[in-house]
Image (tube, rainbow, N blue to C red; front, side):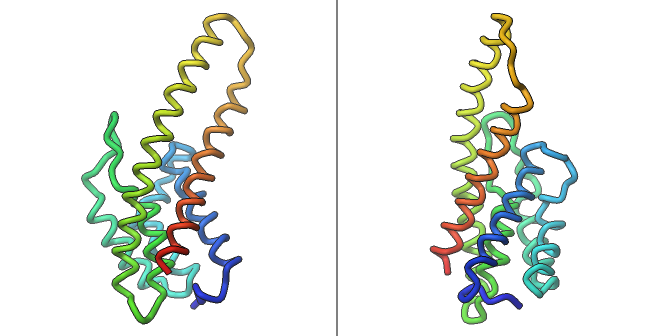
Length: 166
């Protein structure tokens, strides 16, 4: 099992991987890999304990199953929650703290995601205005920029949150 306290590069890699899976929630791929029930065992395997990851993933899935991000409702982010819970849950002195800490980070990232959605809305208005005026718009670059911003915000939330919870 990886040691959370002695492996800072592993933490950064783990959080970058979790943020990459979060892009699936952003509709980049739609592979359903970001669902906690799928992601939990994968992250557990990465950390050396797929069984614990599966248990955390199933628990977070049950807690977030009926919460769909519709309209202005942004529920607890299950992907961030299971990522944080898997990493923080490695601590043998407080195994239950991982789930609580993960749920807290999932809730905090949902607040950040609300901010990002509002920013994307303002961005879309500028995009539409430029399109109406007939300007050439690099849509691919703009979409990659939005996905990159979402990934960076998620990775930063995970790194800072997990470091604080440890």
